Length: 111
Image (tube, rainbow, N blue to C red; front, top):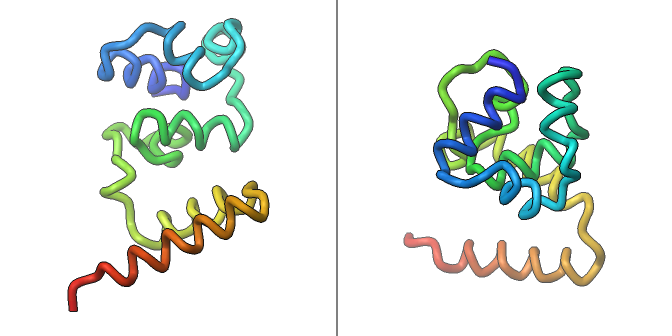
């Protein structure tokens, strides 16, 4: 299944319209046409946003993997790699808040 078909499948699975997804993700109205008719694949940042929106992995969207793997089902090493990619774009204030959140999660762990 191609990138476009996987996105379309996720749209149907979520029960939303194409326009809703495009609006929610702040993507241009021609995005789906580019993906379908030209076979284009968006930038890594956009693929990551789409994956997060549908709670699937970027690997699922970009590879021949047929069964959608949710973010919670992915191997920890892949989740950590994706976390680093997401953190890279944060400003200083967002990074500090993220660090505080991670520390809070660690404190909440049960022994």
